[in-house]
Length: 491
Ligand code: UD1
Ligand code: CA
Image (cartoon, rainbow, N blue to C red):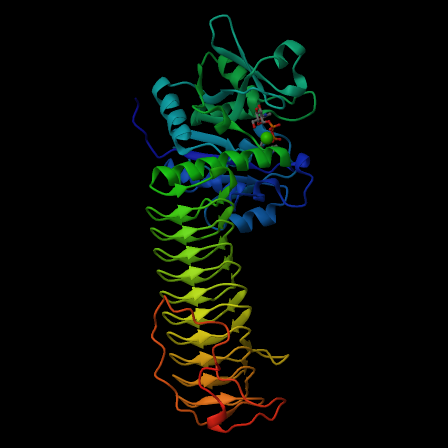
């Protein structure tokens, strides 16, 4: 094997319109496993040691360039005259002195890094003008076919549109990924002649190399589906399926139990710890981290969140939230952006939490809402308790101290603070701060004197019960406040 003078460079073709997608979004930006298609190509190149490729943009260039950021150099191809024309432009941005140039397509996102590495190794070792990736596909429709000569060597690539029936019957296809001898490529690219359609085909370089008395070699994709090029949304869904399977298999090999991979969707960036268990019908997306021994699902959806060790998320939606260890979430909880759930909390039964922190051991069930709230430890949020955090113009904070017991239907009209150890009666509308240890009842809630029994033990076996709270005696908005008529536990 010849030694590399410089690291290989890469050109990624992404200027085409992607007409068959029938989309206003550039094809290479359509998401696959939670990331733009083009990101998968860039990721595989980076893993193959090619960090800063040249991306040829054109259709939707502004959007594609924004999505790329500083991860690639870009050059615009306008108009799009074909893949050879795109490479000619890309070459202008490749540093001189590069020995080998990899060319690949932005619409072929399933190619693994090893394929790029093997291709470059083969090109370098053989000294060929080019090495290209081929695959045998059960349905080769739409791809360029590889024509082999009497000696078995590849002699030409014929595009579907230009192929006769015999050539169309060939099931060996051109994946669209090549490693080139850079010096030869720079010379040959200008010699490509337009096809019948007027397009300049990169695939013509194979025949040109042979005319120049150079060799060309073919590397077979280990898994034929690695070569899949995405041209329409049917192809996009097929690629998604392949990628999902690859992702779930990788997690399983790393020690994660995935009970039913066929109903589990895990984005490429998700991290999952050892002995975590992902139950059926679960979607993990974005930058989500699931810690070891956590159980997620069945029927859970977690996006851009952290789930702590041994926590169970069951039939719930968690977005942009952080959940500590040993927590139970669900069924039917909704953690909206900014929820921070402390250790051993229990959240379920139509509980909604937004931009709020819950201290260790706090429980919230039964159709309740906490927004912009700071909730202490071992708090019991009674059924129907709600923070009225929005006055129509601005959001206001609610603070609830440790060991507070919020009676059923407590309304916390923010901004408001309920001190540690306080209790609210059923239906209390808390409009003013409550001092620590106090019991308040009514609308608006007023303090009453109760000899409160000692705080309930933070014991998991004890069901807090939705109705636990002092109930103001009498009705209406003027509740009686005599202590002796208001039992502390509402029984
Ligand atoms: C191309 C190959 C075909 C191969 C297939 C693999 C050619 C002529 N054909 O066909 O042999 O089997 O890929 O998927 O190369 N692009 C540009 N500028 C252009 C035209 C295209 O940048 O002027 C880009 C596209 O954005 C796309 C890639 O090149 O990412 C391939 O173009 P596409 O039109 O999809 O080519 P195919 O018909 O799939
Ligand atoms: Ca294509």
